[in-house]
Length: 200
Length: 317
Image 1 (tube, rainbow over the protein chains, first blue to last red):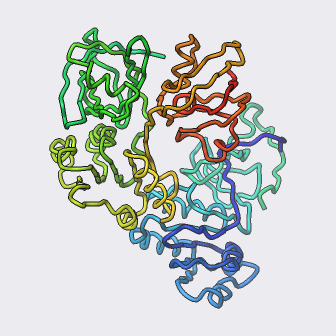
Image 2 (image 1 turned 30 degrees about the vertical axis):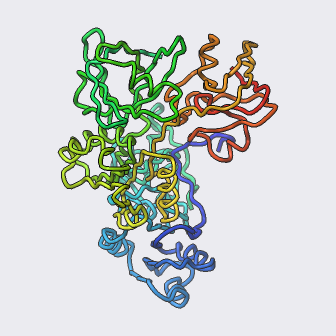
């Protein structure tokens, strides 16, 4: 980690806060993103219609689905998988109009899966509120064989496509929703540093 | 700055107050390609004083044989639009800058709503050529004062078909901006060019209805307003320039032999931004480039349209 140095493509995530000016709100969350949703509903609730799509995950530390059900009176749709949430979102997106504000919380891979769905309808990622929850796991794109591995916790990471040992960079592709992974021993074959868990 | 020498090939009176000029390159060669929404800055020598005004290119982007600009005669013109209307005839030689685009159609948009007020229709004429070519989804809403002021109406009906809507003020027809914005699907971008109150209203309604700023585009060229005479000191060269009340600060500096940077000359692009070293009075910001915060800070000035109410302004040039 170099002080004062920053890869500008690396996304920054914030805490979810209701946007004051909107004609509707759509909150999409997954797993540990449940805590971000609960924090959001601790704030003064907007008057405009709210839709909440939540992908329940049995492995989370708390039963967020139940708490959300108790706390949020209407507009809640709980699904049992991330894919089910993405399918629901895809089906509902044509009905939303300009002025709808989107909020996403969960793992980075989930956030960018949602943003990819929104992009199809011309919603730019910069205009979506995003909170990273639960894990720093990365999706890593191998620049050599073009395989993307999800849930990567370590750098150095061995690519599931070509077996190369990849150094995980901070360079991020918004299109792919993944960080760049480059062969670490290209110049000195066999000289592979020990892998470290830096994205728990 | 690269300059093109052009000759006026044709002048057409479009309405009582609007003239349409066809410009061709003096050497007979094709003009540079441009994208929809581009403008050029026309230099005019008016009694020895150089005036430079930005005008939108309104011809088809596919046509490089000629450029087309339209000029509305301004009631309190500083001379530019009056000169174009009264002095410029077929055969007149003019100098223009290469086209610059500060008002392009967003390629990220899925639908495009264009809102024009009066002479603000001009940049949309070339944008529509682009939109038609690309097959993009768009609508044009064109508001003007009275039937005789509806410049290019027939041409627009031909170009846009059912996509164009007209609003004639004298007939009590009004464009309901909030109603229009409320019913747009995700991915819509809105563009406006016209009188300042209309541009301001659009930005305000869009913000209140939750439209992200980057989906709202506007172009507004301001003519440099007249004001009081003041003195500018150029800190690097030590030159002192008096800015008369009817001249812009940029023009006065150019007249004194300085070569400050510029692009749009209408307070839109930010190219001419100068650092203010000191000012013993008030800066009168007239641009659309600096944020309200930056204007309040007073560390920068856009000399193309802004001036000062002071005895001496020192800038880092």
